[in-house]
Every structure is written in C-alpha cells, then in structure tokens.
Image 1 (tube, chains in turn yellow, red):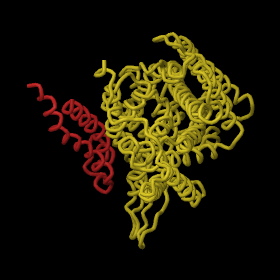
Image 2: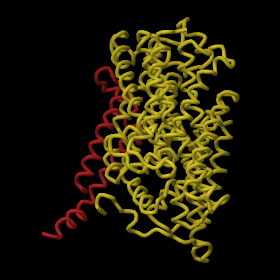
Image 3: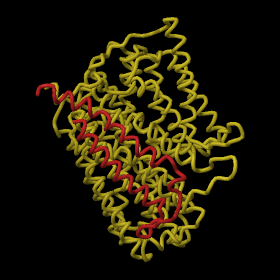
Image 4: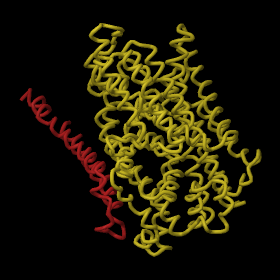
Length: 519
Length: 68
C-alpha cells in the first residue's frame, strides 16, 4: 500500500467533492428545470467551455488507453493525434449551426433537433437510443481508469469486494454531486482536473527523457515495427488506410456523442464554440505527448520491472502509464497524478450520465411515456435516470469481464456514427426523408455490427476487399457509406411519392441565430 | 459605406477553404510515415503531426478573423 500517494489522492478527491456541491450555487439558476440542471442554464463562457469540452473529450479512459495502445501496438495508436486535430475544423464549421438552432427552439439533445427538424418521433427515438447505448460502456470505461489508478496505489490488486470499495465510494460521490448540481459540477471540477492533468503530463515528458537521456534515446529503444506504420504489402493499403479512416471516422463520431453535444449546447453563444475550436487543440498537443508516454514506458521496460508484475498481470498494458508514474515520480506526486486520472474519469462520467439522462427524459419519457409531464417532473426524471445510468455502469465494471466494456465501446463508436446523416446533414438540408433516414440508420447499424462481428469484436478495422485490393478501414466509416447510400436512394423514392415527409419546425434563419447579435 | 460589411463577408467565404488543409495533410499517410528528417530526436512521423496541431489552430484563428 502506497500511503503517501493514497493520502494525497484522498485529499484532492475531498477537494473536488466540495467543489461539486458548491457548484450548485455558481451562476445560480432553478435546478428544478432541465435546461438549468442538464445544460447549466446555457450560460457557460469561453474558458469554462474550454475546460468542460476538454474534460469531456480527453477522458480518464483516453489517458490510460491511448498510451496503452501505443505501448502495445506502436505507431497505429498515434491516430488519436490526427483525429483530435481534424475534428476542430469540423467543430468550427458545424457546431455553431447546432448551437443556434438548439438555442432558438430550446433543444437539449441532438434527438430534440431531429424531432423538430423532421417531425418524426421514431427517427428521434432511434437517435436517442443510439446515444444512450453508445454512452453506457463509455461511462463504464471511465470507472476502469479509476480502477487502474486505485490498483496502482496497492488497493484491490487481488480483486474481490474490498478492491471494489474505493470505486463504489468514488461512484457515490459522483452520483451525489451530479444529482444536486447537474452540469455545473463537472464544469467546475473540470478546471481543477485539467490543471492537474497538464501538470502531470508536462512533468512526465520532462522527467522521463532526462532519466533516459533524451528523446532520441526513447525513440531508439522502440522496435522498428512499432516506430512507424508498416509499409503495406501488395494488393492492400494495410495500416495506411486503417490509420486515416480511424482518424476521420473518430472525428466525425466525436461530436455525435451525447456528452459532446451537452458541452456544446451549454455554452452561452456561438462565438464561444468558434473560439474553442481554435483553442481546444491545446488538448490535442497534450494528448500527443501522452501517447508518447507509451513509448517511454516501452523504453524503460516497465512491464519487466518485478515490482509491477502483479498489476501488469491484472490490468495488462493499461498499467503502462500508472507504472511509469510510479517509477518516475516521488510518492506524493504520484498521488497528484493518480488523482488527475481518477478525477479525469469522474468529470466525463458525470457529463455522460447527464447527457444520457437528458436523452431518455426528452426523447423517450416525455415523447412516448408521459407526454403531459410538467417541467419539474421532467427535471426530476432526468436526475433519477442519471443515477440509474451510473449504477448500470458500476455494475457493468464490477461484475462483467472488462473485455465486454471495451468491445461495447468499440461498437458504440460504430453505432453513434450512424446518426450522422440525420443530425449533421440535417443541419444543412431537409432533403433527406425521415423514413429513409431511419432505414439507412438501421442498415448502418446492422452492417457495422456485422463487420465488427467478422473480427470477433476484436477490432474496429474491417478489411474491405474491392476488386482484389484490400482496404482495411474503420468499420464506422464503411457502415456510414452504406447508411448514406440507403438514405439517399430511398429519400429520392419517398420524396417523389410524397411519403412521410414530416413537418419541419425550423426556419433557415434559426441556424445562424446568435444571442450577442440578437440582443 | 453601409454595405461594406456585407461585401467583405461574401468575399471572405473563400477563407473557409483553408480548413481543408489539415485533412489533406494528415489523411495522406504515406507522405509522413517515415523517420527522416528527425527533429530534436523526434522521427518525422511524430513531429510532423505535432506541428499540425499548431498549424490547424492557427488556420482556425485566421479563418475566424477573416470571416468576422
């Protein structure tokens, strides 16, 4: 048991717990209303939005899994960097439109927008369910990040209930402050969390190279097969197309995730989003550095150090970064670093559970189960659902094999991408027919799942063969192509037959609305 | 003078095209999948992609300024 690290960890956790509850009073609003609880009253400015979206996208799981992938598989794991670069031109172009239309019509979720744009509650239901199902394993994986750092401090290495107890405590804290403060809690805590993360990563990329004698030594220690992507053989594009499609597909999927949408819609005006598109890449730089720590762990050979053998046996390559932290830092600073990762799991878990709760309440409960519910009932329902969602994630991570959560997260990325035609294309044109979109969505889900199944759910990369040439690519993107093909062809047919056109409650000007200019 | 802003807005839409550059630069993998030239011990594959973090950020700031 590493007492020094544990005490620092607990102190920092206590600190953010206090912040989580105090946050309820920050820019005070009526927390019995859903847009106040679930979107922090749509009042977040540039700086807080920067921390909130940063905390949202770069999660505890990212911080554990990306270096673990680089550590285990090498250069291919680096796709996270181009992915988080090319996402920002997309954010800059697309999301201000979403903000504007959502602000005009008080939309809280992407499915709300689909409902308003297409007048089809079934299409909105499909978008909502996809969002909820894709988010659940993501929350579970945040708890995994927490579990790994708790294990790193010497607790729960043997498994069993005692090992899960710290996780349950952290979960109760998370659930309590999310329930009382809503989105304000993760927004405030994100500021602390990201400050800690920046300090930790900067310390790592300075301290470890000094020990190893510079970056050239680190890269020299990486086996050539891991240093670059292998040159593709004949008749295949090999890892080249895999790398590019993973980056592109992940970038498109990112802002379809309900928690990203929640972060975007809580900002106070369009300019906040555009400014953030320019400044959020600072996190991408951080993520790139973090990916490099996978190579540092490789160069140091942390997996062969006897003191880390039991944890490596339990957590596999996910233990690469915690081991590096324990090796490189004094105990007290290891405590800071572990708190950074642990809190880094709580922030997105809180936002994700709020986002899933918003979806359930708005697009399932209100639309199908209790259409006459009052605004207060609506908010209360969302709070309870956020608890249920988190409890589900906790049960998942404690009782089911870890592999399930990882495979479901992989599938989640494929599924969420299938809402792109309805949501993103819908921001620009109403030409696509709601029923065609629904059938296209179903085709994409089935096709994508089948592609993942053909790799036995081990990989998101599907080896598409066209005329003797194999193009390994991200299954989400291939499924999306199928989805688009079906949606476009059927839209042409259905529109010509004037079938189920649906009512559009939005107007062209709604997509350019801005509070600053309207005032 | 009153229609000057409209004029600059419509003339400036071409600035959006700059946003395509990061996609070309980062999705054409064979271009940067190599070790040489290294920079400060970093193989080209790595420092090139890091460089694009800053270039992309700069492009977005520029486009934001120009379209107002």
